[in-house]
Length: 530
Image (cartoon, rainbow, N blue to C red):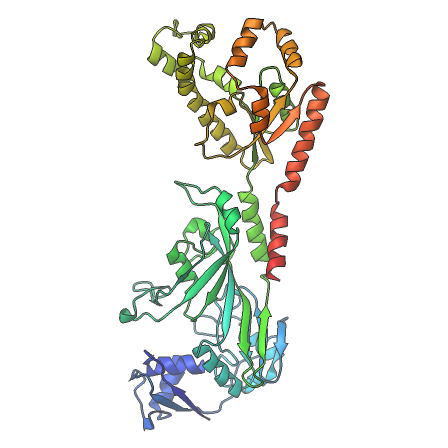
């Protein structure tokens, strides 16, 4: 059977070009060339390494031979089939066709079971017009006749068949593209790399779009520094060329390697999945004989979704809650309610008491800054009475707060980081709005606990607070009405602990319902891709 091909730009060696066009191994093509079965521009060529030029007409007098491959009984998902072609789904972990380094059962053996006509086609790759890596799952187009194989091979060569993949990559990957040429790694022959065309690389073009997280969501996802970024993106990748490992090479070079990719990803990323998380998701082409436009989509298998869900669960952070309010409102009572719900809690007042202890940070700073004024005895904590008295001076009070508040907020951030995977983490910060910590790398939800002034004052006096102490503490804080206005939520506490607890638990319930879970995210993504 005679086949003719027109050489494109930079077609390279004769044997490599014919092997790619016919899907016959290069060693067998070499024998055919040496046995006078190939002509270039009507002249016989017996040199397999002959460099062909753009526009050369290569004719191959291909012998008709049945292949010797045996069919293997199996289950195969078939999306489409007629007498010319089929669209099937390749499972992850299955090599496409036999080769010297792969002696186990391959996709070709499975295809022979479902499409016996492939038995009449020559070579070890009957029906194969394009390939997927062993650990890549998804859609493949199969030629069921020799004529169909030639037409589909031409369509791939002309880039008229559109292939789109889904990939899980490390980091928040922006939309982008790469036109970097790809070739064999200069020192590791089992790898591909970005290689200039003048050094043997071949044209390659990939473009990608982020599906999750969406742009608005990505802005709220915390980025890590000084450690491996824990965020993951789901990407839709369109390839305009079909180079070996193209998506894996381009995305890795761009800085966003595939999860589970043991060849191109750092070991920490490779260990996050049992295989490279790549799936051939969509296939669009014109039928080579009927001209019909055909389009197929395939959602990834279970292991792909399980990997994404696992990463989403790891990414889910606690909702940080700041509890504030004026003296006597019930902030501490709300914090105790949170603790009874087994939620992690933090108290700024308790933190200050700890910082005042001997050899702790505030103790050292006050001793260094003011000598024995507030640390008269190096064996005892900070003299809080002396410090409170001195802070009646407004300027000195501001000076002390500038000294102490960063210590408190540093420990608060450590607290939220330590409990980042709890449903909620609750910190009581009485002077949250007064200290205005806007530059913190954290945007928590704020809760103002409120109560009528007479109720607050009665509570404070029951603790032996004098009118002078109450007036002094009130002067340190902005009015309750202002805190209520600034806070995201208000919880009234005029009726006692039962009302406070009921209102707080209802708030937690409402916030939990709004907090998107990993399962809900997956369901939304699948709906979007279906």
